[in-house]
Image (cartoon, rainbow, N blue to C red; front, side):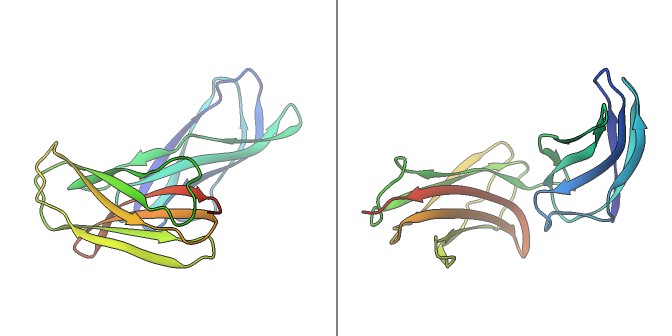
Length: 195
């Protein structure tokens, strides 16, 4: 359990009122946010508030802020871009996952998926798993790869393939593990058309 602080500043010219401020995790396995958020009665123009949030941090992850309140008597909603919270010493980063295919490939055509890793410090014994979720909700393992030893700054690419059998949205997942600890997760989506 840790504390994270959020610095919230009104950059507009109008006072904001009755603010419900939430810190949201994009990956609850890596970072779980505790509590119901924070309440700010008013935030004047150029005024800044620092709000604490209690988090459970297992691994580096991404969070974003959502804000609901009133401006000029009218309700509004705002969300921040996602922000990366670094947790502990990272061995490697799962930088990207791409389905290397034409737009809307036909069912029955093989799709190659490529994940890119970046070594942050010398590491060994990492495992990369590829999975596909089909339009009908089934999960299919595409492959598990024991990665090569990585040095700091080294880039490595790994691939898996899937041959979709049905029309609809396929969600491809890549998971990076160090032992039993997940240290990375990326997603890509492909819409498969009828053959």
